[in-house]
Amino acid sequence: MYTQCPDCLTVFSLDADALATASGLVQCGHCDQAFDALACLASQLPPEPFTRLTAAVVRGPAPRLELAVYRPRPEPTTVAVLGSEAEGDSATDDFSHLVFTPRFARGQRKQKRRERAARTPSGERRWPWVTVCLLLTILLGAQVAWAQRDPLLADPVTGRWLREACAT
Image (cartoon, rainbow, N blue to C red):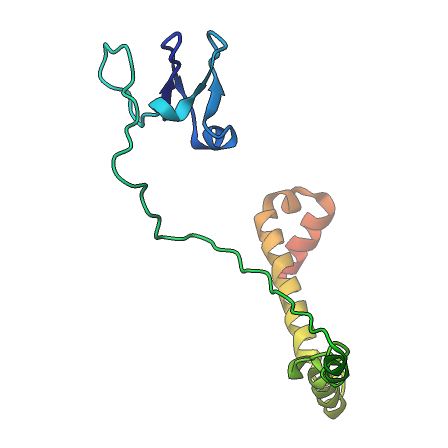
């Protein structure tokens, strides 16, 4: 967006954030004149040569905004009931001490886990994971050895051991 100082006719480029923060009131960086940037706001510059930007003309009623991006929820209003008989009713209707806990948060899941763990011994389900982890570790070592085979074969200790293993 562009705006023009009415005093020295200098054209400035500005963004919507700066314009909104200042509520349209800006100060010229050339002549230090304060002016309303909304009065001659333009989205594009006119073809040169020009002396003044065209003033923003509002025609008709203000545009109605229909597409809402965000609307905060209204804060709940509290109603205070006054009177002696209402105080007696409010004592029986006071539910502020009650706590609502959803069914899933009442410990049923923890109890089901404990029951499942009690049914199966601890080592019974662990051996497949241990076996798979050991196998993957051995495969990783073999992959590293294959990638570094030239330095391993050139080493006097490991090279001799690898040659003997390959010969057998």
